[in-house]
Length: 120
Image (cartoon, rainbow, N blue to C red):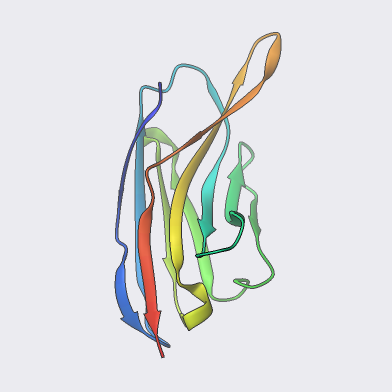
């Protein structure tokens, strides 16, 4: 079972910045993708940003130009630099790893989440 240690969430004023970090361990197969999702109260979990094995990042339209995802593959770490934060960015942010297995579909694993609150 993949283990996660997430950090960096907190309370920030609108326009401020935060950096989320995630360290994954107990990785037992090839990583297909890593990234971040978020879930606001009363809403479904949504993609924020992800990086595939080739290193290409994908961002939600709502965060393009403000958030930057990066990865330290050697240490199984993924980061999310968030700038220009808005109140609508308030959510629990979840680290995500997708593992590729031989002869079966990929499996998704989630961290415990870290709260990001942006005040207006």
